[in-house]
Image 1: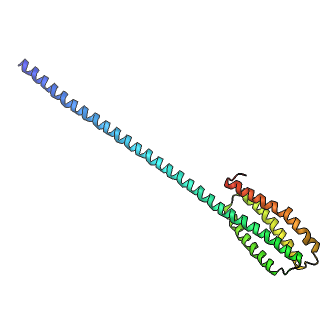
Image 2 (image 1 turned 180 degrees about the vertical axis):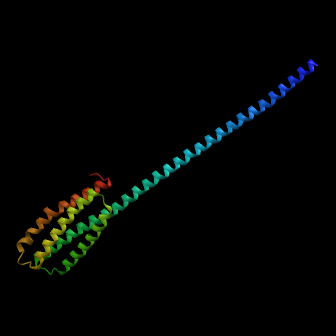
Image 3 (image 1 turned 180 degrees about the horizontal axis):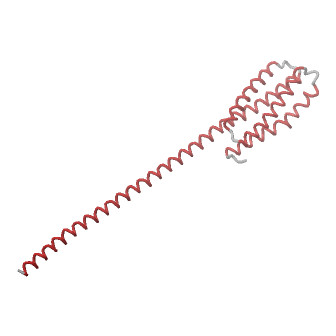
Length: 193
């Protein structure tokens, strides 16, 4: 009986070893599968985070581009309106000095002034502070010259000397501010000299 007990014991150990090996193999396979699934989930998270980062970067780039385009359009309008306003002032000044009927030039001046006022109001909502400060200084000079011109226009014959000097004032006291405004706008847009 001793031989059969030994054989039975060997058979039980063999079966237990076989079953244990299968369980160990299955446990390792499950652990490997979990690690693969975790790695795949981590990779998906990384890919999603990267995609979100790319989307954020694209949206920021697009917002910067739209802001630049909005400022560019605003600058074009403001620069054009300011120059037209000053040109209309000069034309009205010449009409007054020549003693011509200044009604038509005054109408043109008022239209140019209104266009400038509208474009300046729009620019206050769009332009950055450095450009806003320079455009504010230009506006002050333009409106100061306009006030003088309106005062002289009421009695052109009385203010003939002032009217004669005013053209020089426009060139020396106003045009440089428009040039500084244009330069600040170009700098903001990244346009070099």
